[in-house]
Image 1 (tube, rainbow, N blue to C red):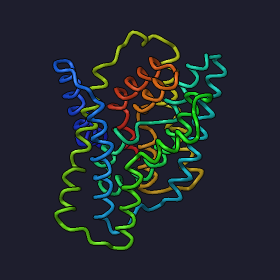
Image 2 (image 1 turned 180 degrees about the vertical axis):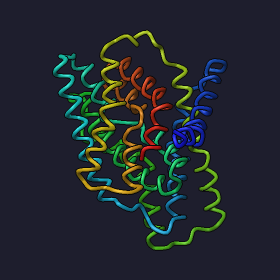
Image 3 (image 1 turned 90 degrees about the vertical axis):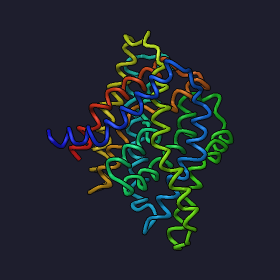
Image 4 (image 1 turned 30 degrees about the vertical axis):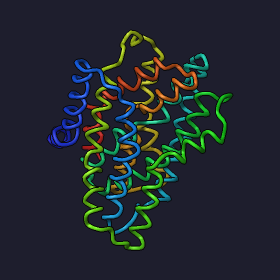
Amino acid sequence: MDHYWITMSTVVMPIIVVCLFGSLVQRWVPIQTESLANVSLYILAPSLVLGALAGSDKGPTNLWSIVEFTALQTALCWGVAACTAKLCRFQPEVSSGITLTTVFGNASNYGLPVLLLAYGTTGLVNGATYVIGQIVLMNCLGLYIASRSKVRPREALVQILKTPLIYAVILGVIVCLFQIAIPKGVMSGLQMLGNSYPALVLVILGIQLGRIRWTGIRRKEVWIAVILRQCVVPILSELCIWMIGIHGILASILLVQSSMPAAVNAIVVANKYGSDKELITLTVAITTIISFLSLPLLISMT
């Protein structure tokens, strides 16, 4: 129990405080988060990852284990969500919404700051590798799930190639493996930008939580999606870790990151391709709030 409260105070409490500020500011001064999100995606996140990799003795380790875990865990989550939707005889829009929130967690906006606080640079580097896989899957599988008829392979590929985080990881690995010296001033600038990333994305998350409309909270579909994401996904993740034979800190990192709340990006995909936006938005909000209590327990148990 002591470990739980230590984790709560050192990892989750800072996140709650930052999100709370974002939510409160949104009530007094409405803020457009699109520009802030672009800054975090195109500048701060790549700087954070590039700086961490360039300052490390080695690039992202356990790459194959992370790839195996991502593939197996995604397949199991997709299968469970699809079977649940079929058994409950949900409409296609509801079915795709439940599948999106079950398969995709908030690994980047929420996951990376948590891993940085909980596991330091090791968590960040391995977590960034996992995030790359999630970005690729969201822009391929995510678009396919949201609307099979509207998604074109070229469109998914373009979205993937627009993601700077991929290039930051590639460049960081090259710099690290070949021991390329980065000028001290450039490195300091990268670290300065990277250090801003966790705070900004959590402010954005708080703003988004402050905008939530709770009118559909009694829908049974919402709570089925919440249970799948909050309870079933961690069990499936633990099963995948056991099946692949992953141990040590990597097992903890993958379990925690894959058990994050439902992905905020799923709302964007739903809005564009016709999934149940209300269901996804409420699932994201509820799982995020629950995670403030469940994540410390999960981290303390690993």
